[in-house]
Image (cartoon, rainbow, N blue to C red; front, side, top):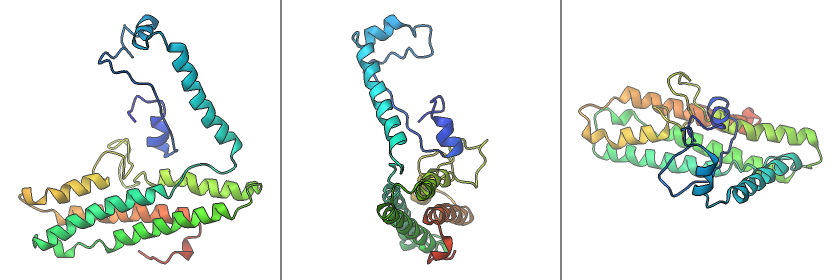
Length: 232
């Protein structure tokens, strides 16, 4: 999702779950935002199917709107993030193990214990939410509201609060850009052998901020933070 997308501010700035869809063309010509952004060019690129494509787009948007209006609980499966988190934590753990095997200087002070604990906390919280959803009377509007609030906070909580919005517009720790992302940490750890120096303080800081971000999301998702096993 690019900055010129209408849905971008909702996701990147406010952490509101958003979707953007569009039709793409195999043509290399890009007319949008140029003087050639005219109906005749659109007709040519779409083989005179502007009306058909517009109907399809309206049907997709309409189905989404109907589900949002009709369903009492949002159809967002927060357990899918468990796989995303597990994949990134596994990659980070492998890099750390490799560096420890290579006896990189100061690497012994680096541990993935709390990062893995935060991953487990999120998985438990997401699974618990699904159990709550199955056991909830969906005609109980107050309970549905509480569950929906827990669901909505997930995307917002993955926007790192530890970086400036001015410096990093998209602060998402998994899909954003910048030093706060898991991808950036994985790349740094993977490139250590090619660097002349290893900044252990920088890595420890990234580990701590990632851990707190994931754990904080798990806390909000769980609802009752006092029931969590982990204390960081």
